[in-house]
Image (cartoon, rainbow, N blue to C red; front, top):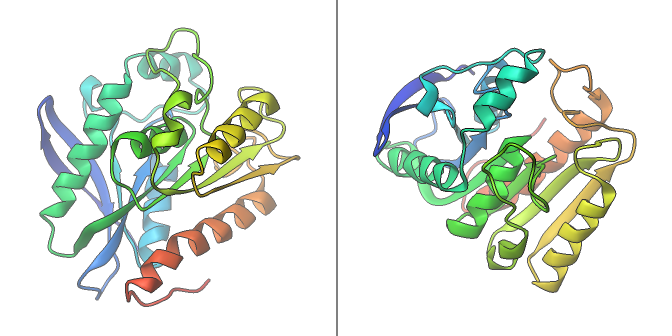
Length: 250
């Protein structure tokens, strides 16, 4: 089920959003899909399409829109990726997600009364950050780095101290081989969530690395990706089914 890019006006100019929606469903629960550090590329668009086939309206805002439209960075171009990532701030991310939700609110087939967020890589960070500032129903964060400690050269700042303000249900996935997110960081996240009584689950795949969900990266782990996808869908469906949307099955 293929989506398309729509144009959203923001206070800082135009932002493209890739939107995929189910066929024949008048009102669909919304999932904001937050990109890797490589842009709203074929992988991210494919995730949106997959979510649409499962009964959700999925929307991926281009977080790099300040650099121009359709910023897609090859996975091997780490230098360009870091340069682009270094331009983002926490305020930019929140503004873009808010603009995306407001834009979807005007679409007749989007049910924005309760919105969830799913993010990968920097998008995993963004999904958690959004939960500290915006009203979200569910958060699914895949290997979101930078949640605990600052990263050299980046303006994004860790939201660890604000995790207690999250009112969403949260599901986190990490790879045990991920050098960018050491086990001590994962433990700090778990401890903060538990101490703050945030309803959450943290799953670490000991044999998976950063980017294990992406089939375009060398770190792709098909078994762990399949497990995580199934769990994430079940997590997101709970709310959809409570609200009367038709359940979807693999």
